[in-house]
Amino acid sequence: MKVSISIARSVEVPAPGERVRTLLQDYESAIRRFPKLRKLTALAPNTYLWEMAPIGSRTAGIAHEVSYAARYHVDLRAGVLRWEPLPGHGNATIEGQMRLEERGPSTRLFFDVRGELRDVPVPFMYRLVAPPFIQGTFTRLVDVFLEQTRDALILSDSGTRR
Image 1 (cartoon, helix red, strand yellow):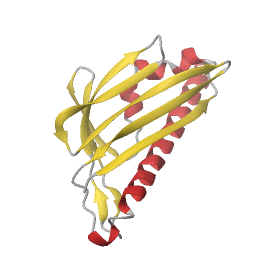
Image 2 (cartoon, helix red, strand yellow):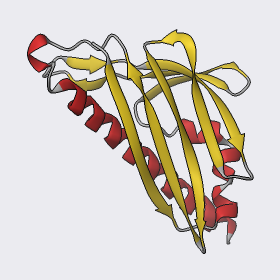
Image 3 (cartoon, one colour):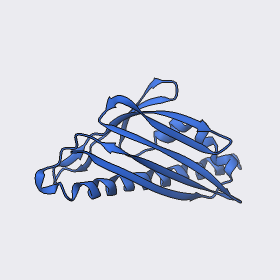
Image 4 (cartoon, one colour):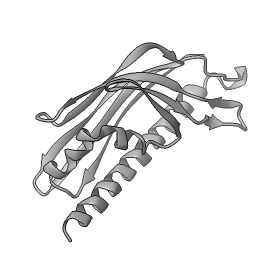
């Protein structure tokens, strides 16, 4: 079964934009914070293969090990990290962006992602509920990622003030 995902979330980071921009400069470290990421493999400069631990519900028989490759582009001036799918790798195509918006002493971090998961094993009786369930599961992963990224930026910012 194919399942489309589309997620747009954001989080307020109590740190100035200049500090939060370090996230874009070292985006590989940021990517590694993503929940359920089992392995991240560099395929070429700015290109990574994601391999994730099973996502879903074993009880419902919906558990999918998502894998995909993406090429990343950083625009520090605009405060944007974009990624585009690299065809021919894995069982998903994922694209999106992280964007920073400075708001005085804080920065809003926006995260937008969309894509398609292929070959999702879904028992027939769950085919109607699987797409919203999977969308919700990925939304929660994105929320956790944003929270962990915010917390890491806060901790590293407080460490630099000492």
